[in-house]
Length: 117
Image (cartoon, rainbow, N blue to C red; front, top):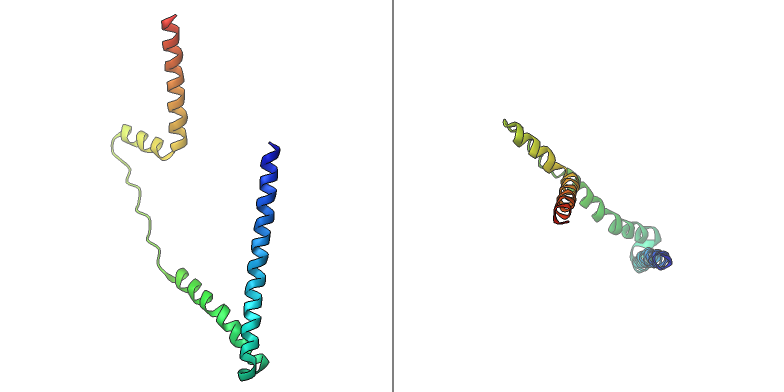
């Protein structure tokens, strides 16, 4: 049980290191780009263009993704037969089907083991 905690802590530390590398890597990349653009555009212009390069593409991507229409789910058709309706209700709840099946198998095993004695 102790090994699980050690592995979880190591994974958390590794994730924090990865996030820090990503954060500082993007920051230094933006700083280098702004510094390279400063002689031609000035300090403020270089910083503005660098900010636009890093902000505008993800913003447009988010707007496009959010504006795409999602397909509406098809309405559920209720079957006319009572047994089909019961089966459809059970089929929606997959964990219940597994629990009921395990219970039936256990009951059958108990019944069969009593008959063999």
